[in-house]
Image (cartoon, rainbow, N blue to C red):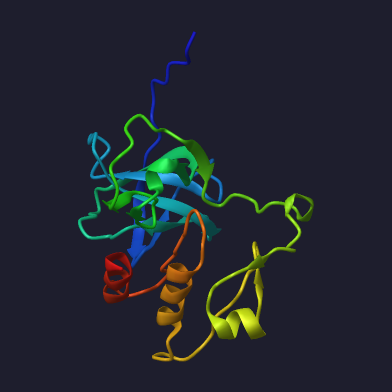
Amino acid sequence: MKELKLLNKYSYLHSINGSLIEAELDDVSVGEVCEIYASWQANERIARAQVVGFRNGKTLLNLIGSSVGLTRTAVLKPTGEQLTIQISDAFLGSVLNASGQIMERFVPDTPGERGNLRLIDELPPSYQERRVINTPLETRIRVIDGVLTCGIGQRVGIFASAGCGKTVLMHMLVNNTEADVFVIGLIGERGREVTECADR
């Protein structure tokens, strides 16, 4: 028999400061996701927040998204779950937002593809599971292949001041390197850079 849940536990927001929320929430853990509703009577979720810590008997949550529209009557509902993402081949040829939702698709959709549910804050693989880097990666950029040869699986950092060509070099690597899949994360970039990258 399935467990029947008769009661839901809600908590009012104690304070909102930018994206930081304080509330009196018990039995929650760091990393847990809470849903936000306009009131305890509402059925439609208006936002989400993630537990990030505790202070002076209050639970601290980081709002996922914008705080516009939240009022004093809004309530939090713990889910008991952490942030997850549904990974599948449907991501190929798509632009995703920070929550893993597809914002734009450049290839036909693959209906019925559910994929695997993975934690966003998942532990990295151990050193025993990592493959040895012993195969050169041909970038077809002479200065890299000749002076700073890269290997398949290697991490490389590109550091320079603004306007020195980091984005141009990244586009050159994507256009010249042979690979099955390219994953490009634009962390903290402005809208113009995101648009230029998607258009290319």
